[in-house]
Length: 303
DNA sequence: TTCCAGGTAGCCG
DNA sequence: CGGCTACATGGA
Image (cartoon, rainbow, N blue to C red; front, side, top):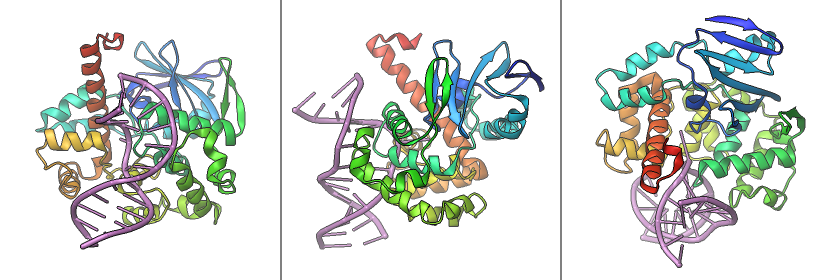
Protein backbone atom coordinates (compact mmCIF):
# COMPACT_ATOMS: atom_id res chain seq x y z
CA UNK A 1 0.00 0.00 0.00
CA UNK A 2 1.24 3.46 -0.94
CA UNK A 3 0.45 6.54 1.16
CA UNK A 4 0.27 9.86 -0.66
CA UNK A 5 -0.26 13.23 1.01
CA UNK A 6 -2.01 15.89 -1.02
CA UNK A 7 -3.45 19.20 0.20
CA UNK A 8 -5.03 18.19 3.52
CA UNK A 9 -5.93 14.74 2.32
CA UNK A 10 -4.31 11.35 2.37
CA UNK A 11 -4.62 8.88 -0.47
CA UNK A 12 -4.11 5.17 0.16
CA UNK A 13 -3.25 3.41 -3.07
CA UNK A 14 -3.44 -0.33 -3.44
CA UNK A 15 -5.31 -0.75 -0.17
CA UNK A 16 -7.07 -4.08 0.26
CA UNK A 17 -9.97 -5.41 2.28
CA UNK A 18 -11.43 -1.99 3.07
CA UNK A 19 -14.65 -0.40 1.88
CA UNK A 20 -16.40 2.58 3.53
CA UNK A 21 -19.91 1.09 3.12
CA UNK A 22 -18.94 -2.18 4.77
CA UNK A 23 -17.12 -0.41 7.60
CA UNK A 24 -19.28 2.60 8.45
CA UNK A 25 -22.76 1.27 7.68
CA UNK A 26 -22.59 -1.99 9.60
CA UNK A 27 -23.86 -1.03 13.03
CA UNK A 28 -20.53 -0.73 14.86
CA UNK A 29 -20.49 3.09 14.80
CA UNK A 30 -23.23 5.70 15.01
CA UNK A 31 -21.52 8.95 14.09
CA UNK A 32 -20.46 8.24 10.49
CA UNK A 33 -22.95 9.39 7.87
CA UNK A 34 -23.09 8.87 4.14
CA UNK A 35 -22.84 12.00 1.99
CA UNK A 36 -24.69 12.38 -1.32
CA UNK A 37 -21.45 11.55 -3.18
CA UNK A 38 -21.15 8.19 -1.42
CA UNK A 39 -18.35 9.20 0.94
CA UNK A 40 -18.69 9.05 4.74
CA UNK A 41 -18.12 11.89 7.17
CA UNK A 42 -17.58 11.19 10.84
CA UNK A 43 -16.13 12.44 14.10
CA UNK A 44 -13.56 10.67 16.26
CA UNK A 45 -10.91 11.98 18.63
CA UNK A 46 -12.59 15.38 18.33
CA UNK A 47 -11.75 15.59 14.63
CA UNK A 48 -13.91 15.66 11.51
CA UNK A 49 -12.92 13.29 8.72
CA UNK A 50 -14.37 12.33 5.36
CA UNK A 51 -13.50 9.02 3.70
CA UNK A 52 -14.21 7.95 0.16
CA UNK A 53 -13.39 5.04 -2.09
CA UNK A 54 -12.23 5.83 -5.63
CA UNK A 55 -10.60 3.67 -8.34
CA UNK A 56 -9.27 1.11 -5.92
CA UNK A 57 -7.85 3.81 -3.67
CA UNK A 58 -9.20 5.20 -0.43
CA UNK A 59 -9.07 8.95 0.19
CA UNK A 60 -9.15 10.48 3.66
CA UNK A 61 -10.23 14.10 3.35
CA UNK A 62 -9.51 16.76 5.99
CA UNK A 63 -6.56 14.70 7.25
CA UNK A 64 -2.81 15.32 7.34
CA UNK A 65 -0.32 12.51 6.83
CA UNK A 66 0.90 13.11 10.36
CA UNK A 67 -2.62 12.53 11.75
CA UNK A 68 -3.15 9.55 9.48
CA UNK A 69 -0.08 7.82 10.86
CA UNK A 70 -0.70 8.86 14.46
CA UNK A 71 -4.44 8.25 14.63
CA UNK A 72 -6.46 7.05 11.66
CA UNK A 73 -4.41 4.10 10.48
CA UNK A 74 -4.90 2.45 13.86
CA UNK A 75 -8.52 3.62 14.29
CA UNK A 76 -9.41 2.04 10.94
CA UNK A 77 -7.52 -1.14 11.91
CA UNK A 78 -5.57 -1.00 8.65
CA UNK A 79 -2.59 -2.92 10.01
CA UNK A 80 -4.50 -6.15 10.54
CA UNK A 81 -4.35 -8.90 7.90
CA UNK A 82 -8.04 -9.28 7.08
CA UNK A 83 -7.29 -11.42 4.04
CA UNK A 84 -5.96 -14.17 6.31
CA UNK A 85 -8.91 -13.74 8.67
CA UNK A 86 -11.42 -14.07 5.85
CA UNK A 87 -9.68 -17.15 4.51
CA UNK A 88 -9.78 -18.81 7.93
CA UNK A 89 -13.41 -17.95 8.60
CA UNK A 90 -14.59 -19.06 5.15
CA UNK A 91 -13.22 -22.60 5.43
CA UNK A 92 -16.02 -25.15 5.36
CA UNK A 93 -18.61 -22.47 5.92
CA UNK A 94 -20.67 -21.51 2.84
CA UNK A 95 -22.80 -18.99 4.71
CA UNK A 96 -19.75 -17.19 6.08
CA UNK A 97 -18.24 -17.24 2.61
CA UNK A 98 -21.36 -15.49 1.29
CA UNK A 99 -21.33 -12.96 4.12
CA UNK A 100 -17.68 -12.15 3.45
CA UNK A 101 -18.31 -11.95 -0.27
CA UNK A 102 -20.96 -9.38 0.53
CA UNK A 103 -19.23 -7.20 3.15
CA UNK A 104 -15.58 -8.20 2.92
CA UNK A 105 -14.41 -4.57 3.13
CA UNK A 106 -15.43 -4.33 6.78
CA UNK A 107 -12.86 -3.29 9.39
CA UNK A 108 -13.52 -3.29 13.13
CA UNK A 109 -12.97 0.32 14.21
CA UNK A 110 -10.96 0.97 17.36
CA UNK A 111 -13.42 3.35 18.96
CA UNK A 112 -13.41 5.27 22.24
CA UNK A 113 -14.47 3.01 25.15
CA UNK A 114 -16.64 5.66 26.81
CA UNK A 115 -18.44 6.50 23.56
CA UNK A 116 -19.12 2.79 23.07
CA UNK A 117 -20.51 2.43 26.60
CA UNK A 118 -23.09 5.18 26.08
CA UNK A 119 -23.85 4.36 22.43
CA UNK A 120 -24.60 0.71 23.17
CA UNK A 121 -26.66 1.50 26.27
CA UNK A 122 -28.77 3.56 23.88
CA UNK A 123 -28.84 0.67 21.38
CA UNK A 124 -30.92 -1.64 23.59
CA UNK A 125 -34.37 -2.42 22.20
CA UNK A 126 -33.77 0.27 19.58
CA UNK A 127 -33.05 0.47 15.85
CA UNK A 128 -29.93 1.85 14.19
CA UNK A 129 -31.39 5.01 12.56
CA UNK A 130 -32.91 6.05 15.89
CA UNK A 131 -29.76 5.15 17.85
CA UNK A 132 -27.87 7.54 15.57
CA UNK A 133 -30.40 10.30 16.24
CA UNK A 134 -30.14 9.76 20.00
CA UNK A 135 -26.32 9.84 19.94
CA UNK A 136 -26.27 12.94 17.77
CA UNK A 137 -28.73 14.63 20.12
CA UNK A 138 -26.43 13.92 23.05
CA UNK A 139 -23.46 15.39 21.19
CA UNK A 140 -25.31 18.48 19.93
CA UNK A 141 -26.69 19.27 23.39
CA UNK A 142 -23.86 18.22 25.71
CA UNK A 143 -20.74 17.93 23.54
CA UNK A 144 -18.58 20.79 22.30
CA UNK A 145 -18.70 22.36 18.89
CA UNK A 146 -15.52 21.30 17.11
CA UNK A 147 -15.94 22.84 13.67
CA UNK A 148 -17.81 22.73 10.38
CA UNK A 149 -17.40 20.56 7.31
CA UNK A 150 -19.28 20.95 4.03
CA UNK A 151 -21.44 23.55 5.75
CA UNK A 152 -22.46 21.31 8.64
CA UNK A 153 -21.61 21.86 12.31
CA UNK A 154 -19.97 18.96 14.19
CA UNK A 155 -19.77 18.23 17.92
CA UNK A 156 -17.54 16.14 20.13
CA UNK A 157 -18.95 13.26 22.15
CA UNK A 158 -19.77 14.46 25.70
CA UNK A 159 -17.35 13.32 28.42
CA UNK A 160 -18.41 11.33 31.52
CA UNK A 161 -18.13 14.60 33.47
CA UNK A 162 -20.36 16.38 30.92
CA UNK A 163 -23.16 13.87 31.63
CA UNK A 164 -22.63 12.88 35.25
CA UNK A 165 -24.10 16.06 36.73
CA UNK A 166 -27.32 15.84 34.74
CA UNK A 167 -30.73 14.45 35.62
CA UNK A 168 -32.71 12.11 33.40
CA UNK A 169 -35.07 15.04 32.72
CA UNK A 170 -32.15 17.08 31.34
CA UNK A 171 -31.80 14.40 28.69
CA UNK A 172 -35.46 14.53 27.58
CA UNK A 173 -34.48 16.64 24.56
CA UNK A 174 -32.34 13.72 23.30
CA UNK A 175 -35.35 11.35 23.17
CA UNK A 176 -33.48 8.55 24.93
CA UNK A 177 -36.64 7.18 26.55
CA UNK A 178 -36.16 5.00 29.62
CA UNK A 179 -32.41 4.74 28.86
CA UNK A 180 -31.79 8.31 30.09
CA UNK A 181 -31.65 7.10 33.70
CA UNK A 182 -29.04 4.43 32.84
CA UNK A 183 -26.86 7.01 31.12
CA UNK A 184 -26.86 9.44 34.02
CA UNK A 185 -26.10 6.62 36.48
CA UNK A 186 -23.35 5.13 34.33
CA UNK A 187 -21.81 8.55 33.71
CA UNK A 188 -21.63 9.02 37.48
CA UNK A 189 -19.92 5.66 37.97
CA UNK A 190 -17.38 6.24 35.20
CA UNK A 191 -16.71 9.88 36.15
CA UNK A 192 -16.12 8.95 39.80
CA UNK A 193 -12.46 8.17 39.01
CA UNK A 194 -12.15 10.32 35.92
CA UNK A 195 -12.76 7.34 33.64
CA UNK A 196 -9.55 5.62 34.77
CA UNK A 197 -11.12 2.23 35.57
CA UNK A 198 -12.89 2.08 32.20
CA UNK A 199 -9.72 2.98 30.30
CA UNK A 200 -7.79 0.29 32.18
CA UNK A 201 -10.19 -2.28 30.74
CA UNK A 202 -8.48 -1.92 27.35
CA UNK A 203 -5.51 -3.77 28.84
CA UNK A 204 -7.46 -6.01 31.21
CA UNK A 205 -8.31 -9.58 30.32
CA UNK A 206 -11.75 -10.15 28.76
CA UNK A 207 -13.27 -11.71 31.88
CA UNK A 208 -12.32 -8.77 34.06
CA UNK A 209 -13.54 -6.26 31.48
CA UNK A 210 -16.86 -8.10 31.19
CA UNK A 211 -17.43 -8.04 34.96
CA UNK A 212 -16.61 -4.33 35.12
CA UNK A 213 -18.99 -3.47 32.28
CA UNK A 214 -21.80 -5.62 33.71
CA UNK A 215 -21.61 -3.46 36.84
CA UNK A 216 -22.62 -0.35 34.89
CA UNK A 217 -26.26 0.69 34.78
CA UNK A 218 -28.04 -0.39 31.60
CA UNK A 219 -25.28 -2.79 30.57
CA UNK A 220 -26.17 -6.47 30.15
CA UNK A 221 -24.46 -9.33 28.29
CA UNK A 222 -25.14 -8.09 24.77
CA UNK A 223 -24.15 -4.47 25.39
CA UNK A 224 -21.05 -5.55 27.33
CA UNK A 225 -19.90 -7.67 24.39
CA UNK A 226 -20.37 -4.80 21.93
CA UNK A 227 -18.35 -2.46 24.15
CA UNK A 228 -15.60 -5.08 24.45
CA UNK A 229 -15.47 -5.66 20.71
CA UNK A 230 -15.76 -2.09 19.43
CA UNK A 231 -14.21 -0.14 22.31
CA UNK A 232 -11.87 -2.45 24.22
CA UNK A 233 -10.29 -4.43 21.34
CA UNK A 234 -11.52 -7.79 22.65
CA UNK A 235 -11.92 -9.55 19.31
CA UNK A 236 -13.24 -12.84 20.64
CA UNK A 237 -16.38 -11.08 21.95
CA UNK A 238 -19.48 -12.35 20.18
CA UNK A 239 -22.48 -10.04 20.77
CA UNK A 240 -25.82 -11.87 20.46
CA UNK A 241 -28.47 -9.49 19.22
CA UNK A 242 -31.77 -10.37 17.53
CA UNK A 243 -30.11 -10.59 14.09
CA UNK A 244 -27.25 -12.85 15.11
CA UNK A 245 -29.57 -15.05 17.17
CA UNK A 246 -31.60 -15.51 13.99
CA UNK A 247 -28.47 -16.50 12.05
CA UNK A 248 -27.27 -18.87 14.75
CA UNK A 249 -30.65 -20.58 14.73
CA UNK A 250 -31.43 -20.63 11.01
CA UNK A 251 -27.91 -21.20 9.64
CA UNK A 252 -26.08 -23.10 12.35
CA UNK A 253 -29.13 -24.93 13.70
CA UNK A 254 -28.83 -23.90 17.34
CA UNK A 255 -32.04 -23.78 19.39
CA UNK A 256 -33.67 -20.36 19.44
CA UNK A 257 -32.59 -18.24 22.40
CA UNK A 258 -30.08 -20.78 23.70
CA UNK A 259 -27.45 -18.10 24.18
CA UNK A 260 -25.13 -20.43 26.08
CA UNK A 261 -24.89 -22.84 23.16
CA UNK A 262 -24.53 -19.94 20.73
CA UNK A 263 -21.56 -18.54 22.67
CA UNK A 264 -20.02 -22.02 22.88
CA UNK A 265 -20.39 -22.51 19.15
CA UNK A 266 -18.79 -19.12 18.41
CA UNK A 267 -15.89 -19.84 20.72
CA UNK A 268 -15.23 -23.23 19.18
CA UNK A 269 -15.77 -22.25 15.55
CA UNK A 270 -14.38 -18.71 15.42
CA UNK A 271 -12.11 -18.55 18.47
CA UNK A 272 -10.22 -15.30 18.88
CA UNK A 273 -11.92 -13.93 15.73
CA UNK A 274 -15.49 -14.28 17.05
CA UNK A 275 -16.22 -10.59 16.96
CA UNK A 276 -15.05 -10.18 13.39
CA UNK A 277 -17.05 -13.24 12.28
CA UNK A 278 -20.09 -11.88 14.07
CA UNK A 279 -19.77 -8.55 12.27
CA UNK A 280 -19.62 -10.13 8.81
CA UNK A 281 -22.73 -12.16 9.66
CA UNK A 282 -24.55 -9.16 11.15
CA UNK A 283 -23.98 -6.97 8.10
CA UNK A 284 -25.02 -9.73 5.70
CA UNK A 285 -28.16 -10.63 7.66
CA UNK A 286 -29.26 -7.03 7.94
CA UNK A 287 -28.49 -5.98 4.37
CA UNK A 288 -30.16 -9.01 2.80
CA UNK A 289 -33.19 -8.37 4.98
CA UNK A 290 -33.30 -4.74 3.76
CA UNK A 291 -33.01 -5.98 0.19
CA UNK A 292 -35.85 -8.45 0.60
CA UNK A 293 -37.97 -5.70 2.08
CA UNK A 294 -37.21 -3.37 -0.81
CA UNK A 295 -37.98 -6.04 -3.38
CA UNK A 296 -41.29 -6.77 -1.68
CA UNK A 297 -42.33 -3.12 -1.52
CA UNK A 298 -40.70 -1.97 -4.73
CA UNK A 299 -38.34 0.27 -2.81
CA UNK A 300 -35.69 2.08 -4.82
CA UNK A 301 -32.82 1.15 -2.51
CA UNK A 302 -32.73 -2.35 -3.99
CA UNK A 303 -31.04 -0.99 -7.12
C1' DT B 1 -53.57 -0.60 15.84
C1' DT B 2 -49.91 -3.62 16.45
C1' DC B 3 -45.23 -5.04 15.75
C1' DC B 4 -40.38 -4.27 15.81
C1' DA B 5 -35.68 -2.45 16.88
C1' DG B 6 -27.69 -4.38 17.92
C1' DG B 7 -31.90 -5.71 25.66
C1' DT B 8 -31.93 -4.80 30.52
C1' DA B 9 -33.65 -4.28 35.32
C1' DG B 10 -36.65 -5.78 38.59
C1' DC B 11 -39.44 -9.16 40.37
C1' DC B 12 -41.24 -13.66 41.30
C1' DG B 13 -40.99 -18.82 41.88
C1' DC C 1 -30.22 -19.44 39.45
C1' DG C 2 -34.23 -19.21 35.07
C1' DG C 3 -38.40 -17.13 33.23
C1' DC C 4 -41.42 -13.11 32.56
C1' DT C 5 -42.51 -8.29 31.63
C1' DA C 6 -42.43 -3.14 31.58
C1' DC C 7 -39.98 0.08 29.46
C1' DA C 8 -39.76 5.30 25.63
C1' DT C 9 -39.66 6.25 21.00
C1' DG C 10 -40.67 6.31 16.11
C1' DG C 11 -41.10 3.93 11.66
C1' DA C 12 -43.64 0.51 8.92
